[in-house]
Image 1 (tube, rainbow, N blue to C red):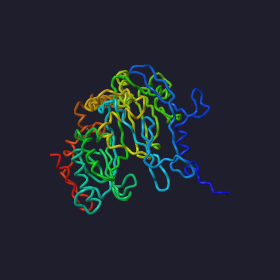
Image 2 (cartoon, one colour; image 1 turned 180 degrees about the vertical axis):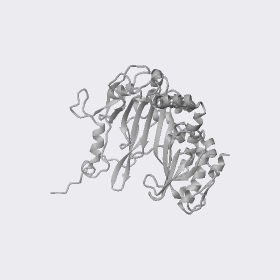
Image 3 (spheres, helix red, strand yellow; image 1 turned 90 degrees about the vertical axis):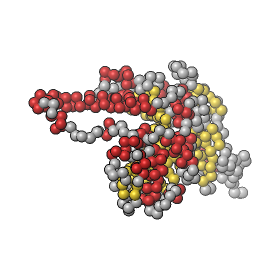
Image 4 (spheres, helix red, strand yellow; image 1 turned 90 degrees about the horizontal axis):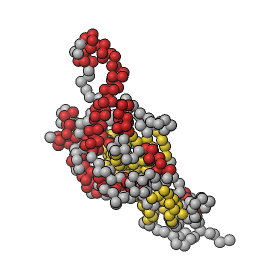
Length: 429
C-alpha cells in the first residue's frame, strides 16, 4: 500500500487546538456550523451588549504535504483584536499573535503603566568589556530616556540572570549575565509615573535603532474617575461576550466580596492569564488605596475604576507602537473596551493617589495607636512626638520623581563591583 503523507493535523496536533478555539461546535444552539461568536457594543451608555455570529476564520494547513491549498509562512489572519501570523520555526509552523490598535480611539485614552524589554549586549553602544561596564553604558542611555539610571546592585540576580541592578529609587531593574547574552530592563509602574515626561517617545526611538530589541511585557491602563465603568459592568460584558471573539471565552476570576452589596476594599474582575500572555483586570482603584479605612467616602472612592491590560511575549510580538499609542492598543484589547475616550492625565492620578494614601495612613494610625497617642500626649506633652517619630518617609509616601532621585544618592556616582563607574546620575543636575 502506498505510503500516505501526513496531513497538518497529524503533523502538528496544535493546529486543531487553535482551530477549535475559533470555531463553534456543530451542536451549538443558535449558530450554524462554521460560525463563531463576535461582539458588537452598543453606543456609550447602553445597558448591555449582544453577541452576534460572524464567519469563522479559515485555518488552512501550514504546508502542502499531502493536501492542496496549503499556506506559507508569512500569511496572516485577523481575529478582530489580534493579528495571527504564520511563522516558520524549524520544520514546524507557529502562530504568533500581534495586538491590534483601535484606530477610532485617541492615543491618549490610555497610558503605559509598566514596560520590560530585552536587547543583545552587543547592541549596547559604547566602550565596555565586562558586564558591569555594559550596565554602566546602558545606564547613561536610560538616564537620557527616563531621567534615572542604575543606583545600586542587588545581592542576587532576577529572572534567571546572574546579576541585577536597581534603577532609581526601586523603580525598575537591569539584569545581565547568561540568558543568551541579553540584557533585560524592567521599569515598574512607579518608574513610569516618575520618569521624565516624554519617555515613551524616547524609548520608542531607542528600541527602533536596536535590531534585537524586544518588548517582553507591557501594561496599558486607563483611569475612569466618574464611575462610567466598574468591575460589575466588566462581569456583565464578559457574560455578553465582550471579552471574546471566539467560541471559547478566556478564563475569568473575581476577587473581593461579590456576594454582599458592597466591599469596602473593592472588587476586581480578571480576564485571561499571564500564562496565556494576556491578562486584563478591572478594579476599584480608589477603594484599593483607601484600604477599607475610608468608609465614609465609599461612593466617591468606588467611582474610581482602573482598567489594565497586561501583555507578555509568549507566542506574541508586542509592537513598539504601544509606547506611542497606548490608548488605541488598550481599546483594541477587547471589543468592550472600545468605549474608552477620556484623555488620561497622570498628574490627576498622582494627586489622588497621594491624597488617599495620606488619609488612609491617618485612619490606620488612629485606629491602631490613637489611644496610645492620646495617653502619651497627656503624660508627656506634644514633645513626645519627637521621641516616637522616625525621620524617614514610609515607602508608600515616597512620591519623588526623577528630579529627586539625585538628592537621595551621595556621592553623585557609585562604583560597581569591578571598578566601573556609573556617573549617569550626574546628568540630573
